[in-house]
Length: 234
Ligand code: APR
Image 1: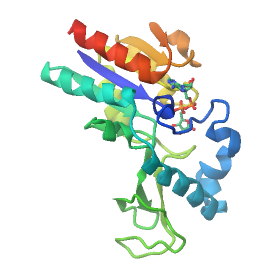
Image 2 (image 1 turned 135 degrees about the vertical axis):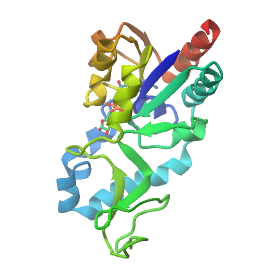
Image 3 (image 1 turned 120 degrees about the horizontal axis):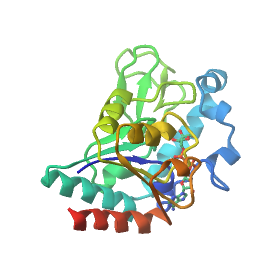
Image 4 (image 1 turned 180 degrees about the vertical axis):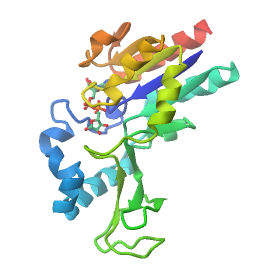
């Protein structure tokens, strides 16, 4: 069985990472256009760096929950049975990797990666980006930015994701509100390619009616249950 899984902020909520659109979520306290657009960064780079520095630092205080760990177990077990799990995440945290998943497609970038807008070099960086930060390759200062896909920018790895959607048996969406495209359109793409579709979420998402089935509840409970059910059937 070949499964494509899309995760969103809801899978990391019980680890202590804020979601975006729930009550008290990040977009209630910050304006998207200020901290998550190229224009906002051009206007006030220090504000944007502070926003992501705080979120990068917060990674050190959280750990993967049962849902991240269950998806890693599914990947390893299906591989042994000639199946596959393609794990696509909109999350910029590193909890899937720390939960044991080995091949995570970060379509919206990663907090622990940065790049230089002068020479485009990318590197891993777990600390704050400081004022005057120097690019490790071209040595230009103040050109290092978070490797995060902002609104108006092109998500990463779309070719690989579409190829996986076109050949999967099952598409599963976990912990995402379905408010942001292109990820919100994966369910329709998977359906058009002939896959079954399942949503696992705390509540019905915006595109819930596009799914063949929905299971509602906290990710740390319903994701391990679903993984066990899949592994028992295979
Ligand atoms: N278990 C399962 N689902 C949960 C849980 C939980 N414990 N807590 C919250 N959820 C669900 C919410 O009900 C909601 O449907 O997770 C979803 C989170 O939605 P958003 O906050 O909109 O996050 P996400 O869908 O990942 O956002 C997509 O928007 O701002 C951008 O780039 C950002 O990648 C992000 C994208």
